[in-house]
Length: 331
Ligand code: ATP
Ligand code: MG
Image (cartoon, rainbow, N blue to C red):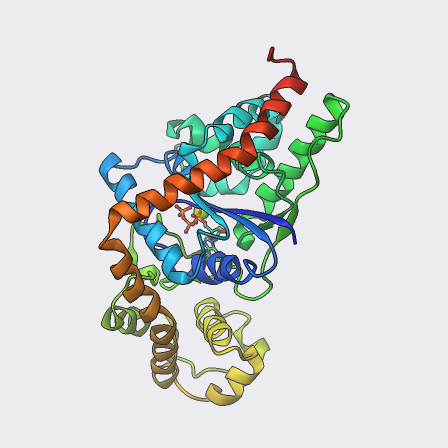
C-alpha cells in the first residue's frame, strides 16, 4: 500500500462535489493503504471565518467523514492546526517557491475576486501550505478533485527545487489521484462554476446534511433548459447545466452517460430530476442520519481528533525536523 494524504477545509458542510470528487475515494482506498485525512483549518483561515463557526464546522466535518466511512482506528483523522509540522514546513516552502509560481495559480485568481490586493497573504501562499501538508508525511498518493490539479503540480515543483537546491533526494514525487468521473461537480445554478462550500448561495450545492425535501427542492430548482434531454452524449456539449445533472446521475447510478441518455433521451427534465432526487436521497440520507448521531457526542469527536493529531505528529515531526536540518537550522 501507499501513504495517502488528503484534506478538506472546515469552511462549511461538505457537499456532493466533495463527496464524489474526494470523500468517496478516501473511504474506498482505506482498504489497501495507510491513509492520513486532515481537516485543514489553517487553509480555512485564508478567508475570514467566524471563530465559533470554524470550531463548529470542524466538528461537523469530522462527524460527516466518520459517517461516510472513514475509520479513525486503522487510519488517521485530525485537524491541521493541531500538528505544528505543517506550519514549520510551509515556512520553508514559502522560501523555496517563487513568486512567479504563485502568480500562475488559477484558484487564487478565482477566489480573490476583483480587488486582489484586499485578500489575505495566506490565500496567496495557500498552495505552499498544501505542499507542506503532503510532504510532511512524504505521502505519495493524494486523492483530490480536478480543481486541485495545479496545486499538486506545484507540490512536485517545490519538492524538486528543494531536492535540487539542497542536493538531496529527500522529498518523493507525489502522484495525484484525480477520479476520472465526476472529479468536478458544477454549481446547480451556474454550470460554469464548480460546486463550492464557500459560495454564498446554498441553492447551488447539495450538502451532505440536507434533508430529503431540501434535496428534492434544490434539484427541482436547479437550472436546466427548455429542450428535452438528448439521446446522444454530443447533444450535451453546449448545455452545461444539463451535462452536470446527467453526469451526477451517471456516477450515482453507476451507469455510463450513454446509458442514462438511453433512458431519459427525448424526455423533459421533470421525470429525470425526480429520478435524480431519489438517487441522491438514497446516497445522502444514511450519511446525514449517522452524522446527526455522531454529533450528539462532541467530546468523543474531540478525542478522535486529538488521538489522530498525536499519530500524525509522530510521523510528521521527524520528517520536518530533518528538512529543517537540511536547510541549515541548528538542531
Ligand atoms: P471552498 O469553497 O471553501 O474552497 P470546496 O468546496 O472547494 O470549499 P475544499 O475543502 O476546498 O472544498 O476541497 C475538498 C476536496 O473536495 C478537494 O479534494 C477538492 O478537490 C474536492 N472538491 C471541491 N469541490 C469539488 C467539486 N465541485 N467537484 C469535485 N471535487 C471537488
Ligand atoms: Mg476549494
